[in-house]
Length: 368
Image 1: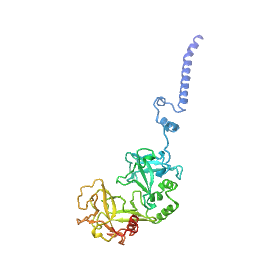
Image 2: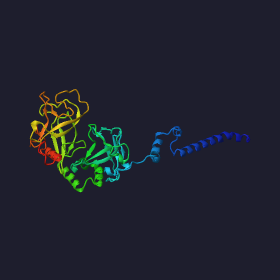
Image 3: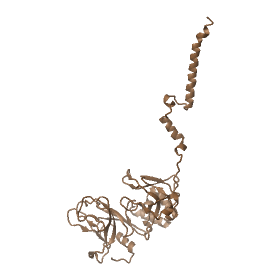
Image 4: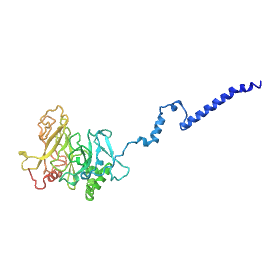
């Protein structure tokens, strides 16, 4: 009987041994998995969502392996560009850009091509790579400067002169006027870079501040003119056209009605856009006067089915549409006529067009 007692206890001892081994195994598994609740899923070769999250959070060096932060833009002066100032905006809705001389260490400026609404933007076209630079039109008032983007074939500064400026969908240069760069907090890093580059002196900065207190600030897409020779975009279906005339120390806001006769119903059904310019008229009926007319330089987009006599044509003068079916009339403005505000044949600022003519020809020009 005594001889059989050890054999009777052997199954019980073996069961305890198996239970102890199992406990040790589960403890080891918990240690390996970081004291997490054990499951077959966590023991499998496929990582869970939690593990993926932990990997992203705890291994930033792996996430950024091979990534090089874009160097800050060092200058907006085309004479001082370096290869690191070259930017590739191709297909981008926007691109965050840092400037070397920014005011806030952590701030970044975002470049975008065209904002359609608050939440909709057009991306930059393909092959939009090059240099941001400040453009000061030759002979123009200092207030007429603007930020532009020069497209180049490579990152070398020597390619700048062989490049071309980035264009908008309307065909004019992509730009941000100096007034906007100064007035809008969003652009403060760009404006600070202009200050450091020497484009904006203390005197010019004071002029901008003074004008901002008394004038409506233009937008990035606003037409700002300093010369009759400038080409600018228009929408021929619009009822009004608003633009600005800039002088050495002034900015004047102008409303005109160049494309249809006021008080005659809706505007033209012609739906296209285009590029136009002002010029002094040489027509016999304007002899002895300083009369400004508008000439179509280029048509852009689908003109639609409208085939009326006043349909804009490249190279021709703009005619004002008569919605009631009457004969269209040539659009013209007598520069020296002091008409009431929003007059049917005048313009909203009586000093604007005389200033534009003076900017173009100086005081010597009295009539064509």
